[in-house]
Image (cartoon, rainbow, N blue to C red):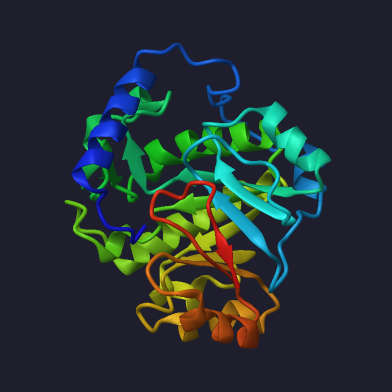
Length: 278
């Protein structure tokens, strides 16, 4: 995730919220199901839904969810929302993507205590979050399987795994590009085994190697950093690119989005309900 650290006031609010959540007892909807040893036949044989290039979307990870945005695709936090919320969005004609952090530990999640300290690295710039040692698939695979099982049990259609480029950051571990490719493919496999499509989040340098493993892409700020050409393999393959900018005006990136077929919107850094589409 490329978004910069929140301002001090927002960090303080986030820390207070994290403490509040930590003191609460998780409800059944919030507690990940145990990992499946074998995907059910209905999950593994079902052709997953996939977004298509140019499809409008809404990405909301904070605040009270606004289910009334007239778009066919919603991307929301998998832990924060219940099966009833997903079902309501489905009744409104939306497909729903499950946001998860698969490359970083978050101390405010209900399964945080299941991660041993040995896999926790440096902070990733967000309060309460630390990079994971993605080489330790013996530890992380069952934990991520449980999270994706949770998404499936709640009725989500797809998964957006975040923090999938630790090898390019100062994680505290000597991660290599090969480590990242192996881990990202593991996460994609876990989603596909459960009948769900899966996004490649950022990780632009590895798109040529990973475009065949992922069903669509989610990108932050490729226009601001002049990186959108790196996403061409997805678009050329008929796969959607769900794209957000935070600082550029829509006039600076929407013409390119229309030419290339990217699904582009402007959002605030907090990823609340507000959006400005192309």
